[in-house]
Length: 204
Length: 195
Image (cartoon, rainbow over all chains, first blue to last red; front, side, top):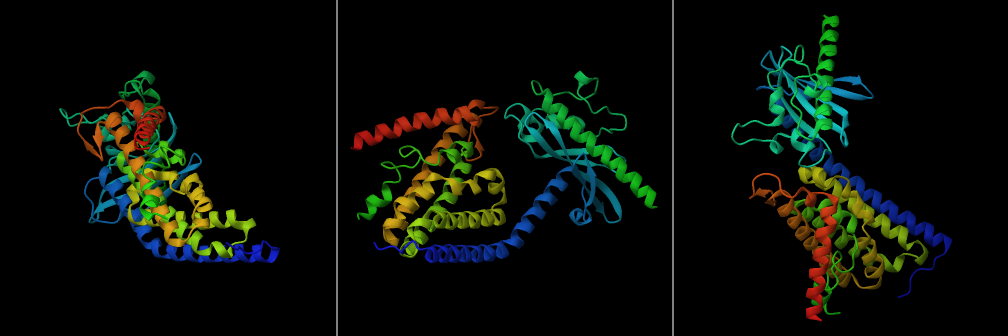
């Protein structure tokens, strides 16, 4: 099979054409999928927020507030039912996980107490640290998971540390580091909420 | 070229994972469950099929000295297309496969078939080869993923049939190597019998 000669011009021309056609095709696919990708991300966010705050009828994603903290950012989503504030979902994180980054969504009620928490992202050990996820630590008999112990607690007086560190949180057996990291993330969310609250008061 | 033999060799005689031992990085990393293995296998099959076709179509126009860079650009483009389409239409599978989707580009199986087969055969033969090798790869990944899921999580394709935790080691890296090793033994035994 006679191939084209590997002259300088031929090589440059071929590579140019191949990359030109490739980039055009990619640009097209990118344009076509841009909409669906953004929509998929929006739905994922809405689901994460609905999991942790009481019923709402607005679009919390469109009212997102940011707060730069510890080289990363916290995101705040206000969920409202009509004119009333149902709750505030805070996207928080910690870098102290056993395998590094853990991202959670904490739902606070307007009085500052925790309504619910869900895990967005983690790399903790399966069977141990991953019990922070509700489905992995779900007990059929009680209907509760490990993170259920945070529900209804207000970090104003509830000490967000594991019992080993003189706190009030029951750590996961054999997963103290992950449990500590989880508390760290929840505390960060609450601290951010306080800063946001005081900023809002300053604006008034 | 016997096209049936061309197509079926990818399943047992020349299975990418169990015989050729190519593309083991995604094989071991992604197969924590059957559906992950299947998803990855199908994504790779798409890339294999399309890149084999394109490489075979333009083989006469590419100067020898720049064939590898050209093949890689073609392969990478199809992988990016798969990535964008998955992100848009199956975001949960996309999140589960994570970084292994872009790694399809460096899957030795894809570049290997382009260089060793597609650049030396006509379009139809190359397409059949791509499809056969890709589906054989998918079968291997699905079987590996299923075994690891059954032993490690007590479920199959997400349907949990055993309560509680399984043998966690099978969901982690060492388990992947163990199961793969035994599957290679089984496939080699099957191939020997047929020979």
